[in-house]
Amino acid sequence: MLYKFKSRSAPDLIMLEPHGRQILQIVGKTPGPSGIITAAQIPGVMAALEAAVAADEALAADAQDDADEDGAERPDTVRLRQRAAPFLEMLRRSVAEGHDVVWGA
Picture 1 (cartoon, rainbow, N blue to C red):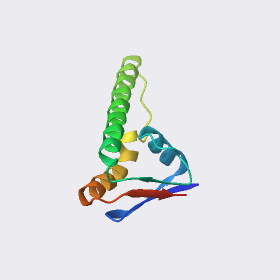
Picture 2 (picture 1 turned 180 degrees about the vertical axis):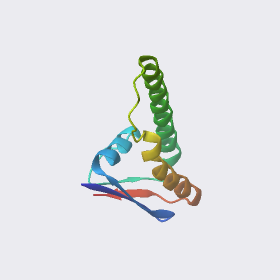
Picture 3 (picture 1 turned 30 degrees about the horizontal axis):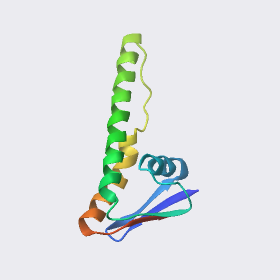
């Protein structure tokens, strides 16, 4: 399944189901086949997502420190910051223009 996020303020954003579900759960929305984030909800959604990104970055930094001490290399991974960046940009544009963000499967 794919999540397709839409806003009149930004191009459509398509995410694989696990990544879209993760972001929706972080921002307090129930993952499902469709839904809406109203323009009024966007500032809170952005704050929640940015806090989760910061927490993920801190966790990654701690893991890197542990790996450096063990002499092991950290495998390349796609972090939450990279997955959330296009969605955050959509949210920024949408709140600036007062448009909702909707999604469908």
